[in-house]
Length: 454
Ligand SMILES: Nc1ncnc2c1ncn2[C@@H]1O[C@H](COP(=O)(O)OP(=O)(O)OP(=O)(O)O)[C@@H](O)[C@H]1O
Ligand SMILES: [Mg+2]
Image 1 (cartoon, rainbow, N blue to C red):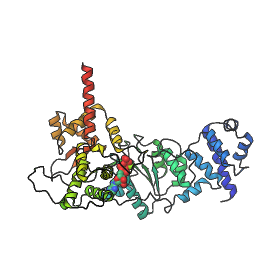
Image 2: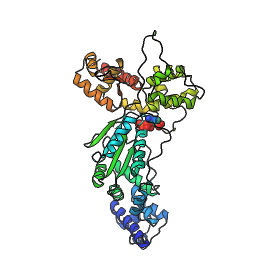
Image 3: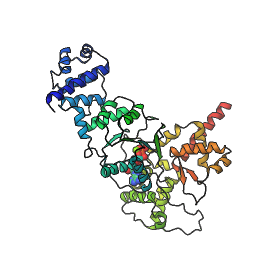
Image 4: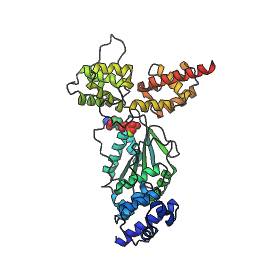
């Protein structure tokens, strides 16, 4: 690549950015305090290496987003953006983030997800489920598998964190990420990203894409332009759009509940935990927090009960285990059963800027409409293991309404399916973590309507 060609890139990028901003060279000069002559020299390729500060003034004046800024900066460094990007997006250089810990369970879910990602027809998939259920962790594992097995480049975009400050996207990879993020938010970046991905088999992961209720049209256009690209989204609520395959992710499987009769002989801990991922994961968290607690039958039994109270939701269990610095295992069980939300905000690990799980769950219940929240409250008052038909009869609600609402609640992960006896009807339970929130919300709605009547 000659220097001339590279700087043509800068001149072209600058002209394109100014046209995008819809201003003349004179107006840009006025807004940026850079002289008209300097702008002309840059746009005609006579000046090839402007100072970074000059470029920043121009970018600020044109109100450029991350993606266009990155393209300008790369062009200044003598590297035409598209070539650098294509190289950076090769299979070796584009791995997904490395998971820090072993994946527990999820064999079936991983097989289903990677199977879908390997087919030609499924191009847009959304893993959906409540906060902390393990959507990101599952997506990481699937992306890693495609990357190592099929040498697929992966562009991983963490949509949950704030976008880096404008102008900070220096590396090609950061620029690619900035384009993808901008595009997913409905902004520019389509042409830039499409010119890098082209007809390559690649995976774009939009992790924690919770702000939008449906994928941006630009994302669908990108899929049209790049025929072998797949997009995997993780989100707490379903994104509804034609062609988007929803994959609801339930919490980790729990052991069968213990017989309620006091007379029953307690089962040995080992058989309670046998092969149950929720207990296995919780035992590993407990072991890290309290290495002195050996996994005796009694410890395993208590841990299994705690898992039940926390619904097998990994983040809830991880946070609860952090409270073992303060509480004994028995105390933890008592709190988990009476007020599980007191344990779900991590005592030691969470980032101070991160919203706690309790607040996220409260917001999810708060967003529901009154009728839906009231139904969730009513369902939460039933003993676990109801069928849709039984719920309809007890609550005197039409069966079709219950079926529709339970379906919607399951998609959002607020209701879980319980293991059914063979051939029996599906049985459900409201997550213990949201039961109290739903009851409070339903009670508040009832008080409001009573006040309106009086
Ligand atoms: N199957 C699993 N095995 C081991 N650890 C897990 C598993 N699932 C989740 N975790 C851990 O639990 C925590 C929460 O999981 P994760 O971040 O994937 O949840 P999420 O569904 O993406 O939540 P959010 O909606 O808040 O983004 C993480 O620390 C993750 O590593
Ligand atoms: Mg996540």
